[in-house]
Image (cartoon, rainbow, N blue to C red; front, side, top):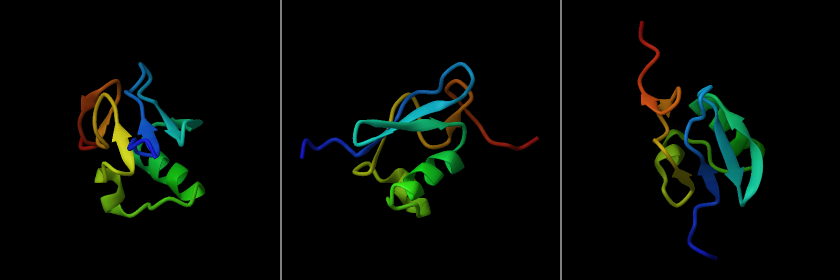
Length: 78
């Protein structure tokens, strides 16, 4: 094993989507944390709340699990 986490979430694109790869294979584009969890679930990987902060499972590039919309951190509050 090379020590790299199996899941890599790329930085947000201009539309806010983030490319997700699992074991180097493109799995899809996530537009929210829920999308990432759905992709993990489909591949049989852990989806507990703590999984998104597990650096041995997921490498977040260009922002963490709560950074969307072209890299801007924020919430859904109005």
